[in-house]
Amino acid sequence: MAISGSLLLFKNELLTLFYPQLDLQQPVSVTEAAHIADGFSSGYALMPTADRPWFEVVNADKSHFYYSATGELLLERPYLGDFVSWLVELHHHLALNDLGKDILGVLGLLSLLLVFTGLIRWWPRRGSFKRALTIRWANPFSLRGMQTLWQFHRCVGALLFIPVVIVLVTGTAVMYAAPVKSALTYLLPFQPQVKEQSLPRQPLNNWSQRLAIVPDVLPAAEARLLYLENPQIRAKHDAEWHPNGRNYIQFSEQGTVNNVIDERATPLGNQVSNMIYPTHVAAVGGSFYLIVVLLSGFALILLPTTGIWFYVKRFSKRSTTR
Image (cartoon, rainbow, N blue to C red; front, side, top):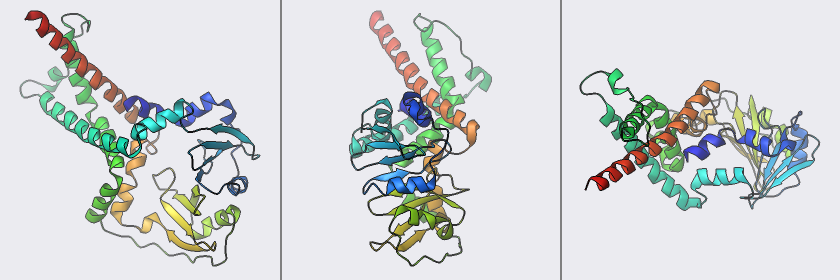
């Protein structure tokens, strides 16, 4: 999970590396994106952004289609057809759908228990923190290597405790998204007032017409995700953390706008829950926070490696002394 998650922080860069045709100099326009979206009747589509200038459609069987600024199909990626697709499925739910999410939820809770009890065991009761962070380096394969492994394990856990906890808490919360959202909404029910916008009454029968009304219905928001089967638009406000936004414009069967959800008008707990995913994937905080999340991934690779290695060596040592 740590390896796949760390790599997926650079998902767009990986796609461009494996598929150079996606390295576009000109982003797809809203007009061209709408024209392409009209050719699909199921799945969803991701609007172009600065870090992914292509227009991406994901159909019902989870195949991905990538289009250029001229509407040319650049690439079709079938489900589980390449390394990046496997990374996504493994990290999201171990490629086991709902069963994988249940497993990851339990493992996330157990991992939090491990890191908290590890910090308690490490916490100096006598002496200084400096001594508790000392590592006496030796070849880990040598007899003295057990001490180095144990000290290195403890120091990594202590020094990177906060980044590790942030990633584990947010990752586990994503697995239990519905109950976490309900709990936060119950604890933080405050609901701010946002000026309501008048809804257009005319039928909007294609994506060009639907996308054109976004600035009027959700001022200062940008369309990020299109639901193609039952038409719906997700949009992002400038100050919103979620990369795809959590504002919705929903359409009736007749094509009229029948509901608008402005995230800023929802309970504070709901807004906080919408910050969990972007915190987990380093969608906020710039380069500094990206480094923090990468360090947490580094720690979550080293902690089990050094911990298991230490216990294997200790078990081997006990076996040879009997």
